[in-house]
Length: 452
Image (cartoon, rainbow, N blue to C red; front, side, top):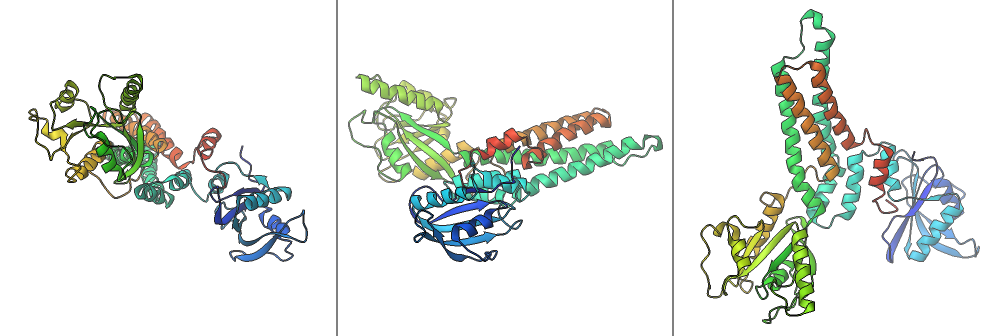
């Protein structure tokens, strides 16, 4: 079981040098340890920043650093315990020395995520909000940050709580019908119960649908640009990336290895990959490049296949132009040149004509990528749900409600319906962490950085 009786310490700012670095303590001895580190004889004032001198025990006449001490007295703190933050100069040597001094005074080095774990264990945040802390730290696009901030603010928690409250109310009325069968009085009709369950199912379905888009926003995706040599793959790669990363020449086969760049497409963190041209290799190096290109294409979430509009089609080109061809974005490049072929019937809906020299079609490619990744048009509002664990549990609850509704419609007893409703409520409670085993907590918080 997790202990909250000792005092923990860690550096709370990123590794490296900076103007300011923060060392955080949390636990019953946090304020006392800070007093000993600074040789302060009077207590710090809660929520008041205090300038103090941190002394070096190896050189009593010298100061290790001048620090700003802020005491957040529990339970009104991040962790719900007494928390001390020592703002020092951001030298790794100084910050590590402060941690060692705190450990000499009785603190223990914190485990990854242990400050947020203590916040969860003390009821300051639920499990959704705790996971959102990590997501907010890891966000690389504005939409990722907004989605995490919404969940940290409790938006998803309130949505789940409202659904759970409706299930509890329905279960109570069904239980009452079981408790007074001899009176012939039912607190809810079978039809009304079916309608209530169907309403809950619809809300869970909307959450799940939103969650599939949210998971894409949270996790990002790998998009591979493929096609024949000299089709315009590297030119498109540079245009999407916004920088000249790939070498572009008229010589076919310039790209031999995989080249990657991470970009923001309407809030989705997309890693685009430029690959070697697909053809019979002329040497061992090109053969390895082609092999890596095909491996990347097989592993990608989405493939953007580039076809040169100014040269004759190959068999691979024709396969991608087929309306029933592979799933992906088909880009017809060099739209400013004379076309060498006529698009096959029905292929217009799956192709985007592009001329990088004029900028034609680049925005359309971006929109098509986002649409295929998320299954819908681009949106700027953050999704309600984005975590794969939450999404799996919402699906579990939705399936249980579906079974309960079918059981009611088939004339099954209230006991069977109540059992399915309890399964749904168990799944919802697991999302917010009311039923969270220790191994799950270790798995979640073990992914956090030390100091958070």
